[in-house]
Length: 158
Image (cartoon, rainbow, N blue to C red):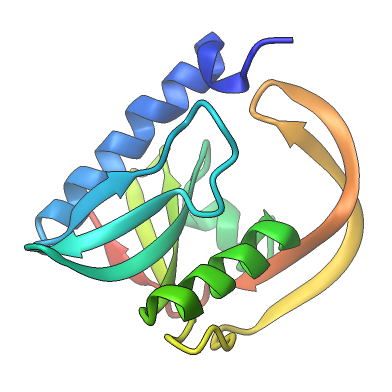
């Protein structure tokens, strides 16, 4: 079976991820993505000059803020294992961990600080085992998920 990133839907998410990276660049941050051919513990390292400032989990979703706050109650669903690894990497690199939710229908990038440089969670999240879409290409997975509170997120617009 091929990698999800090599499918048309996977390729579309790469373009969207670069749109989000451009918004971060306006803040002076360089988005250094990890290898998409594997399952890296983080999606990106954010740099300012030659210094690592943050590790990040990034997702692109076909929605707007109204859908996030209304339909989804202000919660962003991410596999809990990814959030746990993100916090661990933050502790190892001694930098904060950010969650980056790019909502393509608006478009807007919502940014929240998930963990501090000690790897301790700073953002409220609900942890629950649920059945969700497995990948960008569909399917179903029953796994432990984090529902991250996105209320009060910093919003970056094009």
